[in-house]
Image 1: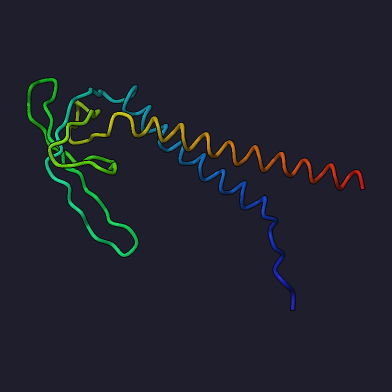
Image 2: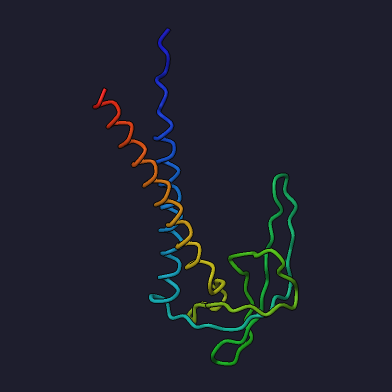
Length: 142
């Protein structure tokens, strides 16, 4: 019976780094889309309701907000992010799409996540490649 060959641990680390880079690209795209491509504006929003849906592993939080658009209309929407310690009545800074005001993001979440995911992904990939280089040098020297 043939055994399935095992992948070296470094392959798993490279794949993990790639997943973080994918997260960086995803959140970077959201940030670029909202900040530069879409007709967007910043606003102060008030959290009106936080729905908590209990799940087996982790609760899901749905954050409802209301805000004034730049035309003076009151708009409501569901926030893309929940941050620990958010409470009903809190005021937060959001970015909304003027063409579809119900499309909103927390102003700092996507740019921050893009930077964090990118940094972690690059660090994992660089450290793994350096480790592989050291192993290759040891093999060549012996």
